Length: 222
Image (cartoon, rainbow, N blue to C red; front, top):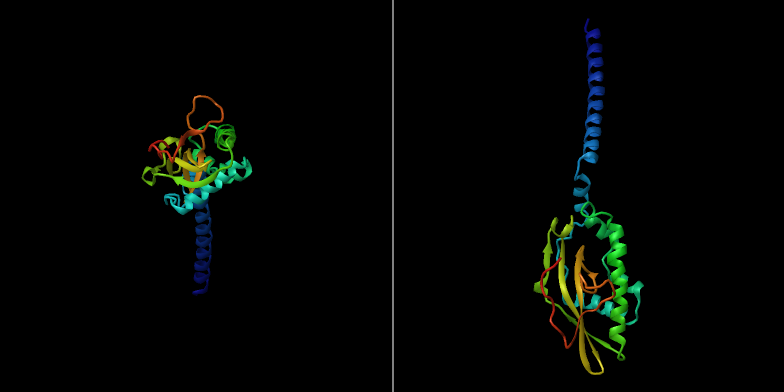
């Protein structure tokens, strides 16, 4: 007498189980479609890429070593080596995606193009009067500023420091030139503008050459 009732119960349980699995799959599919089609979903994902991006890169020895490498690359006029210290294209595209049109083209045709021109201009100025020796960096750590997401047409925050100076000796005279702008990517300082930005003409330009160590900064910019 109880067997038909038990069979019916099992059938109902199986139908309920199949229905539940199908419902869960449907909910997951709807969630995926919404995530893809919702404006800002991709940007939100991109903004989470650099998990340690809010960490300010160190000054002192770490910065001295990177700027010493840059100075050597300027003296030898080595664009391939100097480019390792230049802000990465993938990072720039991630920062600018959705904020400016064609960030890859802007990186290639403006940022990288000016860096190439500036490297030649710095080289010509520094080696024009004979051998040089790198003495160190003149930087104002207090000028470093956190540029939060949304500022300066960027979707990802970063640290910025302007006017870091490369100090060198030539014929027993101390000289210096400025690196216009360094910004951070995952806790490391990179050059984003070697020469001044903006500049009066679209040619390679040395930023603030001076006798002596010069004055770092001024603060500001992004």
